[in-house]
Each structure stands twice: as structure tokens, then as C-alpha cells.
View 1: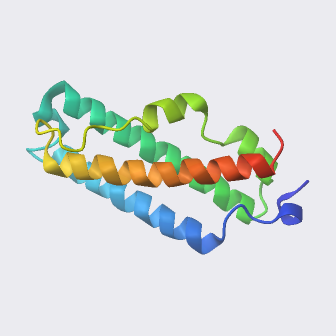
View 2: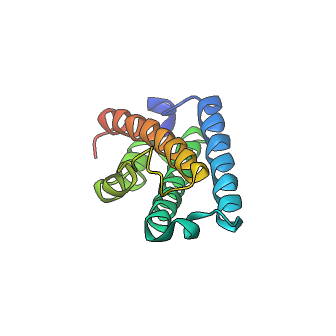
Length: 136
């Protein structure tokens, strides 16, 4: 079944807004990494959270690019679900939540962690909906 038969997984404006959100978070992460109060200033815990943010955003962007490919008719929704869905290993890393009130983490890192988790959680729910619509 091709993408035109089962329709796009999500309306293009939804993907575009989420993509913009992910790129904004990516820019914030880059700026934070370059600052004096970046993840390195918080020691190993800060570095782990920075890597988790990077994993979330990379997975989110890859997922959204696949959704754009479905919307453009380049791949089917089944292909997206099978080949580009969020796998259980990625989810286990990306859905781990940092303690939002951890005083050892800079406030900017805590805020970025929370925002990236919210975005990834929304994508994980959408990924599950698409996977249920598309047999793997």
C-alpha cells in the first residue's frame, strides 16, 4: 500500500511546527553547550542529560523527516512504521526523565531537558498511532 492510499500520518503543518520546535531546541542546546554554565559545568550528570537531549532531538528530527517523506509520497506509512519508527532502545533512553528540581543541574539545562522530553513524548505517542495503523 502506498502513502496515497492510507493518507499522510500527520498533517504537514503539524510536522512543520514540531520540526521548528525541534530545531529551536537544538539551537538552545548548542548555545548551552558553548556557555560557561553548560552541561560540563554540572559534571557527569549534566553531560549525561546533554547526551540524552541530543538523542531525543536526533530521533525526533529523523522521525519527522520520515513523516515528511510519507506526506510527500516518497515512502509509505508502513515503511515509516517499520523502518523509521522509534524503537524500544531509543525510547528507553529518551523517555528517562531527569529530576526537574535537581539543584546540581543548571536551570537552563533542566528547562531544555523538560522541553525535549515533552517533544519526544508527543512523537512517541504519534509513532504508536502510526504503528497501529500500519502492519509491520
